[in-house]
Length: 97
Image 1 (cartoon, one colour):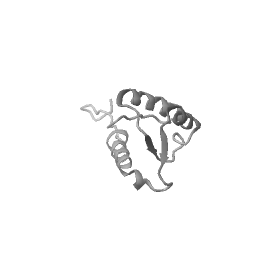
Image 2 (cartoon, helix red, strand yellow):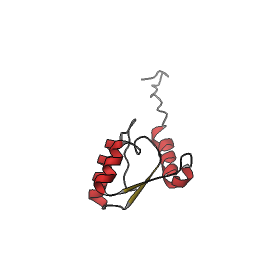
Image 3 (cartoon, helix red, strand yellow):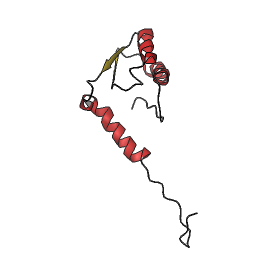
């Protein structure tokens, strides 16, 4: 995995900052393929693209299979890490502690 930015709500500025950090570690790509989420179509990402000279490419709306690897990873991460049902610990008398 190259990197992962996890939050409840992510802005284009946050994504741009994260991508700058990745570029420092991994080098500069020619192009970044994104879905059409607001964090990728924002002015922050447009400015980042112009500033870095990295082209932004977008999958067709409603075609997540064009980004199948990422969609699969997101689904697995969501199921295995984010959708965990935390059960309270029960004492010997059966009451939640």
